[in-house]
Image 1 (cartoon, rainbow, N blue to C red):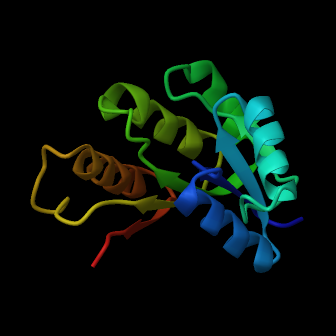
Image 2: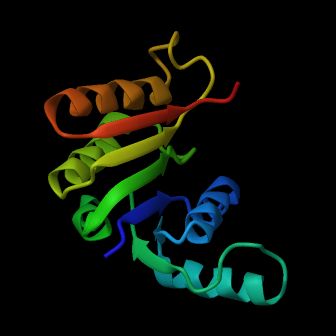
Length: 151
């Protein structure tokens, strides 16, 4: 069985590129998006019309940052997670930290986080807070983390 990778924001510009790269490498990539059925229909319609180069018929799982009940089902069976902070999420302690905790609890072994330039020197940025949380989780659990920042 292949390792499954969950991709937050898989229908967006960066997320769809990550999905394509994973699929081209033969990996099982799962889109973690809000309102999965709506996005599924929209994504497939855009791909069929040639308006998007997003992969057709990806596996979708519902993930709502404001609804912790969606975290465990979204993380089920995943070994890796690609995480971007959605722009609408400002309170990462309440909305992202619990997701990271559930990811580790359910067996996610590696988390790749797309951060921003300057997060290492600006502790007030939400991205810096997420990076710090990932470092803490890596010390507590068998978690590998990767951080990507623009150069």
